[in-house]
Image (cartoon, rainbow, N blue to C red):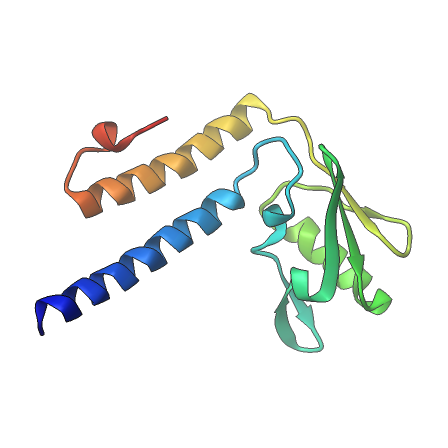
Length: 139
């Protein structure tokens, strides 16, 4: 393997790692509504796991509210059930056409849990760079 091939391979792998970390950070709850919060949700749609953003329009009309409007109204119960059963801690309500997801105030325990998730990423980054977790922390 030549140096250029090695550098290209390392760059490609690092880019994938950064992309994965950004995706994980986008799905962290911060107390504000973000459509990225629902990126990990997979709906069982006619026997196939399908990303929610392919089945519905996701909007944040207010800072603490997400709305999910399915393209196929018959998928509404399945989407609502999957969101309810997810680890996001959101309680969906629907009016027959749109699912509303109020984003609750970030409590101290939820913030600590979020902090633990970020700590996991710091430890992963530190193990990759060979530094301690404290030195790799920027926040």
